[in-house]
Length: 321
Ligand code: UDP
Ligand code: MG
Image 1 (tube, rainbow, N blue to C red):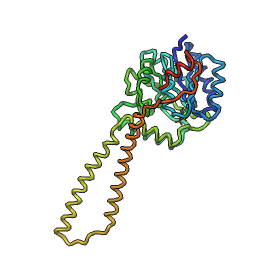
Image 2: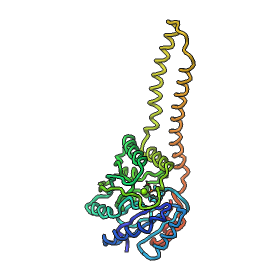
Image 3: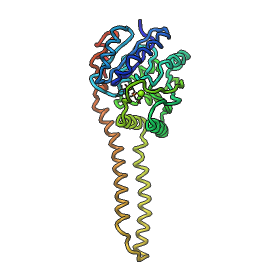
C-alpha cells in the first residue's frame, strides 16, 4: 500500500542517535495509525550510521534508505528525500531529536484542516550555545530585512508539506538550496505550529561555523540582490564625499596658506577605500560563483544505493538530478 506520510530524516554521522530517533518516530507514527514511510538519507556519514539504518531496514518494511556517495550537505539531503518520498504529506525532521517527533501529529492535524505547508516555529532553543543563539537570531532578522520573500523567523526545516508542494520543490533545479526560503517562495496555504527546540539527544552539532557561513550566504544570495546594490549605494556616497573633499582641498590651495597636512589622512582614506572595494568584489564573487555552479549543471546529488523503495534502486537512478 502506498504510504500516506513520508518522514524524511537527513543524517550525517548520527550513529549515536539514529536508533533512538527511529524508535521515537515509529512510536509516534504507529500511534497515528495510517500507512507511512521513514526515509533516512545518509549524507556521506563516515561512522556506522548506514550500518545501523541497514539493520533497521531489515526488520521494518516502512523504512527506506537513500545512501549518498559522499557528503552533499543538509539541504541537498532533504531535497533527495523529497524527490524519493511517496507520501501524500511529507515531513522533514532532524535526526538528533531537537525537533520533538510528537509535534508531527499536530502538523498532520493542521494538514487535515487543509493547510499545504505547516512549519515548526521555535519558541525556545534549549541547550544550545549562546553563540549559536545569537548568530541564529541575527541571521533570521537580517535575512528577513533583505529579502522580498516572506520567510518566517525562527523556523528551521522541521515542517510538513503537501504532495503538491513537494512536487513543485522537486522541479526547482537550483543547486545552492535554501529549503525554507524555497518553501516560502512556493506559496500555497501556510501555517505554523509552535514548539520548544530540545537539546541535541547525543553527539555534537554537524553544523560547524564554516557550514553555518556557507548556509547563510546561500540563503542571502538565493533570495536577495541587496548585497549587490550595496556597491551602488556606497559608490554614490563615496563620490559625494570625494566631491566635497575636493572642494575643501581646492579652497585650501587657492585661498589659504595652510601647510599641506601629512600623509596620514591620505593613507587612511586609501586603506579605507581599498577595504571597501575588496568587500564589494567579494560580494560580486559570491554571486558569480553561484552562477558558475548553476551553469555546470552537475547533478545535485549522487546516490550510491537506495533501499526499500518501490522499483528498487532503478527508481532511484531516475530520481537522480
Ligand atoms: N546534516 C546533514 N548533512 C550535513 C550536516 C548536517 O545531513 O552536512 C544533518 C544532521 O545529521 C541533522 C541535521 O542535518 O540531522 C541538522 O544538523 P545538526 O543537528 O548538527 O545542526 P544544528 O541543530 O546544530 O543546527
Ligand atoms: Mg541539531
